[in-house]
Length: 246
Image 1 (cartoon, rainbow, N blue to C red):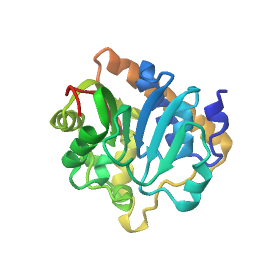
Image 2: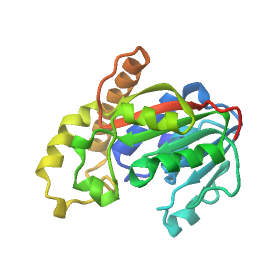
Image 3: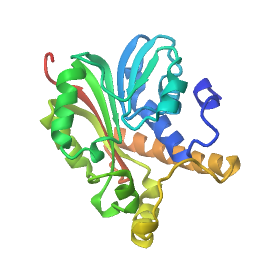
Image 4: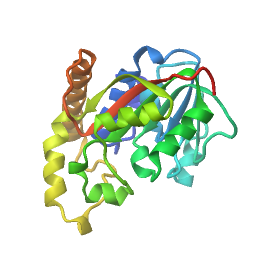
């Protein structure tokens, strides 16, 4: 088992673990020694360790406005990774920018993405965006998290283009969760909804669920790379800044 997985917290949800592994797979050769990264929505140390734990030399600015003060203090000492609630000041340019399940919580998602690209994405820099997919799946859990919307993949691609990005590849993740998510959005009473939070059903079940989700995502990524689009509960787009400079 690699170091990033050994350090993941015992209550880390298998969905979060599978998502982190999928992001690492999608980034592929974009991850290299010395890479300079802005991670928006990456305030969880487990996520950064899974994606960047194999790199000895990196500069990662993980930004999450919801990061608790106590958790922020715990994460300060990690080598090569800094955590905070606010974007780095000025026009710092990054080779790679992750925007992980953030745009759905921003009322003006188009303006927000444009500002991030203009101020923080280097010329020809890569941007990986993930968002929850399909408005038909909107549920009390989305409302609880402050989500304004969910997206079709075409909407994500149009949003990226409007921000000055060209889509290199795109697709969906978590195909196996599509039907359960749809059913839960219809069956659960909104007044009783709770956030996903930490996993509470034991390591054995977490391992089994995590393996299924990891296999699910691996298959969906492989299919997307050969042009076969399978719908899933999360949409993603790997993009490149088409502008010559910021």
